[in-house]
Length: 485
Image (cartoon, rainbow, N blue to C red; front, side, top):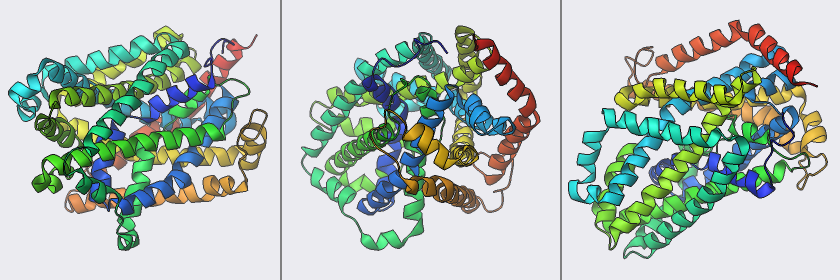
């Protein structure tokens, strides 16, 4: 790796990594899940798992990227051993398949930003805009546009990523704060605050509250996705690991909390009679149908609706950039030049993402399969850290020169024991949930959201990676040898 390829400052690294972590899940999924699983009780469990899942895994990813200076597959090859390259391949595969359909989501955000700017949402209504847009060629156009915007940033490498993050992330935080402040000043907003922040302590006896809180941490912080590792490649030599992980974790969750305040206060202030229906809607329904209707009923609603979709677009694009950089970096480690690797990754994303843009069942299937797959990615990071040696990783990387916050042996216990246990329990639980959705067809490999489709697609991916493991390892080794002077 060229000596010039690093973030210019800690501030640049933090902002870029926050851009990776803060995505649409913070703004549309967190408020819905928090509201439907205990409000204040959920927040307690959510904060617990920030410390018991997200931050420890972020420390692993920062340490792997800083030590290996290669993408996820190269890092697993170098630190866990060549025989375990397939595990890094799984992390890369999972994040890449998410990139394919995530640009569809980013395209939705851009479409609604445009509709709010032009007044189309006010004239036609959000439901009509959605019904005429979703699963249409227009959704393919916005998907391609989102991929092209991300590719334009990644084209310039880490400097391009850093420059964009320095503009978009502070702006995103300002927008979310403005929207949250406006929401809490609406008449009746206190009902939303009470709903979100008043804990029912008895609900903490319900295992589902804890499992949903763990899931939300796994999905909205980006821990265990390989994205933090990818950005950590470009850390400066004396950059801290553990404090950075804490800053990213708490910064990301702060945005989620502000989004929860923004959404729930708006819902309870403007439509209290339908509050349960609104917060219980799916992600697309809450964001693209209900929220515009609520903004339309608010004084100066058009202005605040535009701010909302601008914030959502920024969150989606910064996450899309990190997903595309991950896929590009894996190809670079295999010997492909950056610009060609980027074109291959983005071009493949355009092709495969088109299916999700045109067919909502495909979109939901891919979101289900690879969303649960991220939990397996977290487990694989834990296994790789064990293979390298948790004590060794603490001594040689985490607590090495430049450390601002030393990590003690308790971190080793979390990564070596608790995180694997959490991952296994969470995967079993989610697959069991599919049985409740469709008891007769839950093992159907061709179903949209069944356990069978998860297991079938996972099996194909894992089998292919295991079969190709030696070839991938040789490619990584050869590419590394060619880079050495």
